[in-house]
Length: 147
Ligand code: DQA
Image: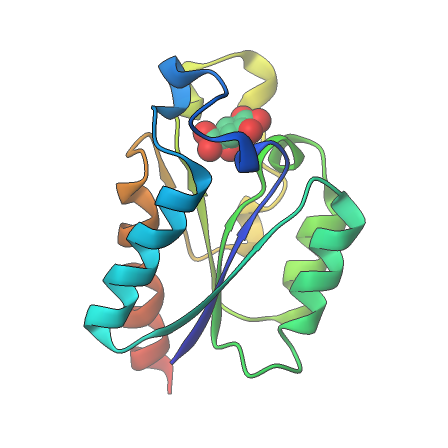
């Protein structure tokens, strides 16, 4: 099974940015955690992070051709603004899980909208880095059930 974990803008600054919302762990530590978890489960995982909306669209589209079975995506601020990411997820029609490190539903009003949500099979918020591991489990269960 091949999954791709896509992270949006400013998540490369994990460990530095707003630790009260995102904790002290770095982006590299996040990737290591997911990598180790996936290795234990025999899942092949690739990672992508960009601060550019169009590059995130390109990466989602590339999943059509590179054997990706499912996507885990934290679109970060683009969650709340991007019809392009929603359309890209719909276009590739792969199972996707939306993850947010912080509990977005308890934050500002402008974070209460998620454009990508309707293209995702599940959403996980507020579980820190562990939310990505939960997403792996949900995604893999879904893929196994649908093949
Ligand atoms: C985030 C929440 C978003 O509202 C914010 O813009 C982010 C990170 C999260 O992981 O909690 O950059 O997606």
